[in-house]
Structure formats: structure tokens, C-alpha cells
Image 1 (tube, rainbow, N blue to C red):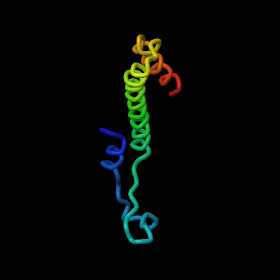
Image 2: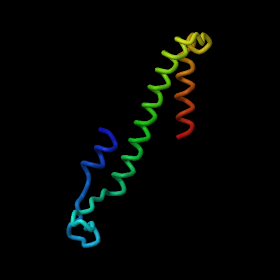
Image 3: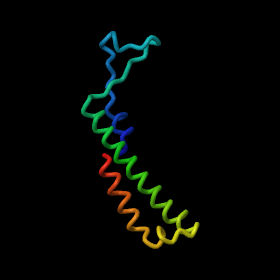
Length: 90
């Protein structure tokens, strides 16, 4: 499940609270703080995974194609170092 799906599946309509009605008469939807925080954590994980995939593609495609032997020869080392650096920043 992706972060957006988690939020969408857990939306609650607050039609009984006058403050929750939008000017156009539709109901404002809300989500519990715990669900929102879980979705933020999931989104960070999704972003990290996408970043690693793109970096791996960069090393495999660009570096090898451009003849950067020092990187392409030892691609796994650089990918592992990149993953480690991402974890340090989180």
C-alpha cells in the first residue's frame, strides 16, 4: 500500500460538525494524526526506494555508457555507499 492509499482509505467525513462544511456545502474530510504520520513515514520510504532505483539506473546506464570505469567497474560499492548515506540523512 502506498501513502496516498492509506490516507484515502482512512478519510472520515465530519458532516455533523458545522465547521467542517466547505462553503460549497461539501463535507471536509479529515484523517487521524496517527494515520497521517504513518503515511508520511511510508512516503519517505517510497521516496528513498525510488531514489535508490534511479541512482542504480544512473550508475548502470550513464556511468557504464559514458566510460566511467572507476564507477561502473565497482558499481555495487557505490550503490551500497549511496544507500548508507541515505539512511544517515533520515
